[in-house]
Amino acid sequence: MLNTPIINTRWERCGSSASFLSINFSVKKELKTFTLEEKIIHLHEAPFMTWKRMKRLMRHDSTLKSLYEWSPPFFSRLLHLSSSQALHVYRYLHATNPKHIRDQYKTRNIEIITPLHEAYPKRLLQIYDPPWVLYGKGDISLLHASSLLAVVGTRTPTDYGTQALKHLLPPLIKKKVPIVSGLATGIDGLSHSLAIKHSGKTVAVLGSGFDYIYPREHKKLANTIASEHLLLSEYSPSTPPRKWQFPARNRIISGLADLIFIVEAGERSGSLITAYQALEQGKEVRVLPGSIFSPYSKGTNTLIEEGAAPVLTPEHLWLDIWEN
Image 1 (cartoon, helix red, strand yellow):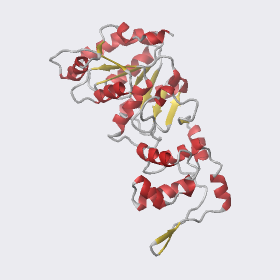
Image 2 (image 1 turned 120 degrees about the vertical axis):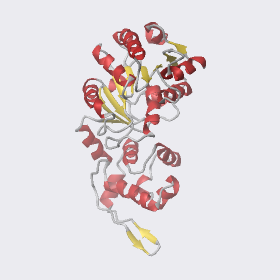
Image 3 (image 1 turned 180 degrees about the horizontal axis):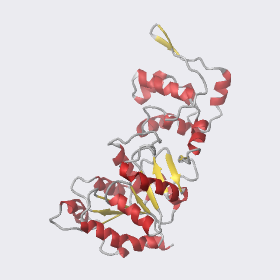
Image 4 (image 1 turned 180 degrees about the vertical axis):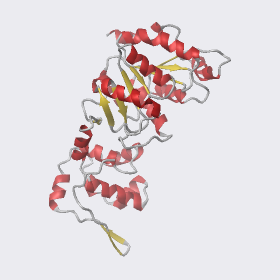
């Protein structure tokens, strides 16, 4: 989290009440100059803020006109925060400046994109829970590619899965279809690497901030993607990886793509979460079929049983809409 103080705030307790209105008029005037987009970024960067809490605030006031007039008790009540947490939110909003936050990220070649920005991908606007903010390093134009193929699968692929991917993906990559994946070990990393090897483009969607590349062994790959392709996250750069963030990340992978290709997934694979999220988003899901004896194909074979199309040739990964 970036901390750019613009004022000194004071919290004084008076019996059972609290006084927190020690803001001078010049500061109040500056707070009123922030745009809605800057206010969204400011809130998103605040401590204890989650997607659902952002939604509650936007439902309460979609213009955020009174954001800097809201008190700690208000934040506590509406966002279900403890008094201490609500105070942290209030203090952060009154001690930092979203303009400075954006400028500091720019010095690190990090773009901040909200749904109000023209660079925000239209595909994500069509899903139920689009990210409030996207952080991007690299070629932002990839978010608007005419064709995007998501590829996800097991972290421990078999030789069959690896060879199948090496056979199926290159023809799509050579047709300039960018590959979207999650930078995870296994199928994700291989998909990114194949796109790079065959002179294609790739988008890596993280489940953490840019300062915490996960897994660590993919830091070099992440650096290559950030400089020549696109590294993307809905989490501010200082956010470490947490278990629950990766399933949330998966909705962005499927949301960005036109077609989702699942390569080897066990019965409880996270890739199945991506597949079902994609179906809920109205996306096409296609699957690499596998042996009925392989635990790495139980999930993918189940998807085929439920109606997903099997992929046997590179042509099965092509969508007719990409012709235009």
